[in-house]
Image (tube, one colour):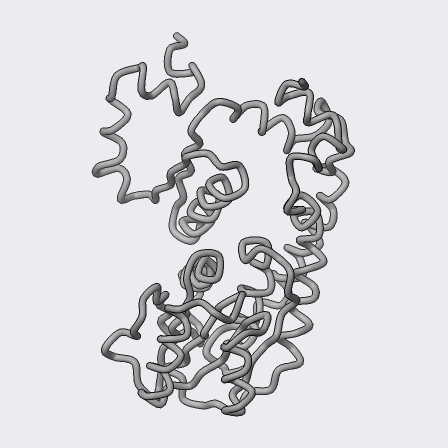
Length: 281
């Protein structure tokens, strides 16, 4: 049997332990981003007077809301407050001046469907993002603006489709700045990295494989700051779901007031996180 490190040099072996095809979806990430941007630009909206935005979703369908919430944290021009709703009901303040993004990759998420009904009752402005299911059927029947994204993916792999349309649509409604240049730059960087982190590239030349070796047999910890908080959260979730390992995340400066004290725990415990580094002089 190959060791875990040896598997990194055998593409066929990697595919055998990845029956869901997550690896190929990760490599298609730049392509998904371009398709998501195209879908958003084709959607027409007839809303006005948006004063708040709420992203309603769960799990992989909600993390895009966290990114959206922090995306404009240092961009006050033409932005409105953004909140994420991981619940069955909207916050009490939600009314006809609130834009609700109902995000459910499957279109069948129980909590998202309940919030959808709640948003209708409160006469909120609604945009749906889904690959189909009940969410899309309701949106079509009610003639609400909606985006139908490609089906057949794991929700976490559909991140570009579930996130990128939201800032683009907010810009269309004049409640967010135009970040098209930043999105294009990010996609170009991802495209440039495709060969650098390709599964076919040897370990000694592949930063992704090198990082995997460094993290082997550890419990990864990710810390973020301000708009990188959602990035840390996303990393944690990806390790949980893709690698099936425990992982945690936190944000500065809050962690300076509590989390940091946890690292005074016995070396036997902290070594689980640092792979023995804590024992080194």
